[in-house]
Amino acid sequence: MKATEITVWYGGKINLGDFNSVHIEATAGALLEEGDTVKTATAQLFEDVKEAVRAQARALKTKNPRASVLEIFAGLPVEVQQEIGG
Image 1 (cartoon, one colour):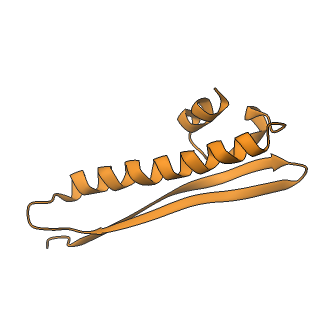
Image 2 (tube, rainbow, N blue to C red; image 1 turned 90 degrees about the vertical axis):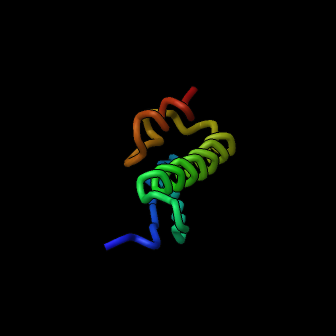
C-alpha cells in the first residue's frame, strides 16, 4: 500500500495569566506526487506547522508581556518554551 495523502497536526495550550489561556494549533495536509516520500513530506509539513504555532505563540507573548515563561507553557515542547522565553 502506498500513501497518497498525509496530514500533520501540532499545537499546545498557552496560559495568558488571569485565568485565561489559548490553544494554538496548526494542521497541514499534502497530496503526494510521484517521487515524493512520506518521510520527507511529513518532515516538511511538520516543520511548517511548528513554525506557524511558534509565530502565533511569539505574537501572544509580545501582546502579553506580563505572562512569565514558567506560567505560559502547558503542552508545548521545551524548545518552543526556550525560543519564546528568550
